[in-house]
Length: 499
Image (cartoon, rainbow, N blue to C red):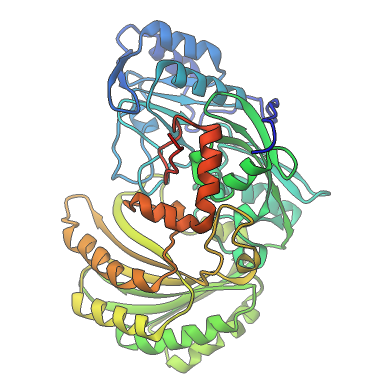
């Protein structure tokens, strides 16, 4: 990378309480029981053996907690957000500091254990858990320290978006974060980081001024504009390919937290007119406005369409920004709420574990092509597949002003985000909905930028990951080869090192 890797000490080296109140002593005791050790697997799926002595050695090396299948809280702790991934790790390591992360990585490497990294556990592809492997659980390691004078925040690798928002807003400061407060900062802020503030302040990665990381060899490094700048470039969009970020330093922006949420819903028959209005609205939208044009099919196969979004400001100004919807006539439902930003950031949370299953595909569009809209509407109207949706959301703004090569994230010219999705409950047959998504996707993809948001990966093939990074891909491979030559961190939209 042109710079030696600089080993540093941890900024956050203090013990955090385990969420849920589980006693460390109880979990540690179960980890030491003779019956608790079990077979594990390596990256290739071959079986390996872990003894009680190995587990005791790991527990002794960390301040956090090792949890094995024999622990009373194991079934709770192994769960991730999506019920699609009901996996059973051989052990979970709940870390509380950078040194804990370092010890967990060194243990995994020494014993050749398949390893996943988890924060919020929201990975759509299930990358944050494994069967018969090791899960490094960052969630207890969640401190946020705000420097109001410098307008920066240091955020520990296990923090959730809610931790970040609740720490910064009392100072009337904020940076872009997603839209569900129990999402992990680590996943969001390495893959890109879209949110309600993005058009005004840029992606989360655009506000990342430095990181502390544990690499695959267990070393601790800092990466910023002057230290390991190639690594800092890569981790801003390259996902979890390069190591575990244990400290983010984010640039903050002045923001009083006043936000207005608006939604206008119409019958599906209005969809073509709605997208014309949406194209007009989005073409002249101020940076404070983020909007989405959606088409949804209900459980009964009935269609509705909507324009919804948020405005960074008071209700009256928000309504004025959405004045173009008046051309659509009276909506069948309207919601306009002025509230504080932290409240809105958790409004769509639901539980930390979802009961619904889902599948989606995601891309970017350079324009809202009328031919694409006509094609989509025709297909969706004929298909009538229950519980499916298409949404086209605004990006652009400050995000589009960053050069394609400035960060690993390359899709700066994608003015719209386009997602096709379906959901189902346990016991329901998902086949029709999944086929609907794939068929519609095959129609949309040729008209897209060819990329996708890596934080939304499902079963996207490896060549699509390559396309998402465009001309940045070769540089990412070079960096991956240097810092992770064995592809230890491969449970992600993977960038393979050169062999």
